[in-house]
Length: 273
Image (tube, rainbow, N blue to C red; front, side, top):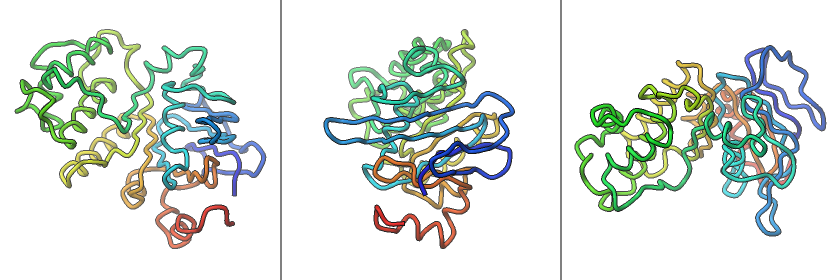
């Protein structure tokens, strides 16, 4: 089933083939995508995706490699521009008001994007200045402590393992989601986008991600998480969407993806109904 997904607190999430989901709209959506499409060369990574996510929802994004998960998250964050369609985040157009969208979103991508010549604390200081967050050494050290890197704060990131670099990326994410109160409240992100957050982490790191997602939910933030770990996503998220070859194949309660029918959908060869 491919159509328009509306994920929100009133009633069950709905997909209507070729139409618009009929649900009461009580407030402005956190994320709205309309006819969203993006290609790289001749290949369409995302094709005509319509999606509405209400504030405070936790959404797992599922699909095989190359299904369009990362592309969708990057489009929502304004990191790349669509070839067709549009994205609104809190009512702001990701193309026309890109700066506002960047302030409202916090994206954890595949790359750690650390500065190898800097220490862990210096890396975090750069992010703090960009996000309008106080650069007090003790405050930033407390953020590093949350990702279990405080003991390495004065060490060069060049010597960090892949898992430690991933934790540095989470430290930057915490700054963007107001782990330390920003001077400028407009810099606080309200939509968090996690692209394979469990990648490169050990088991304690898995628990850290779970706790982070729960803490974001407790604060009423909106979250979209792309993951292959369906069981973990089911235990954490309200809703789920399945992408297949760049198209929205299914949307509904995340719990359904953990059922036998949900597993059969995920295991089904692409292109079959």
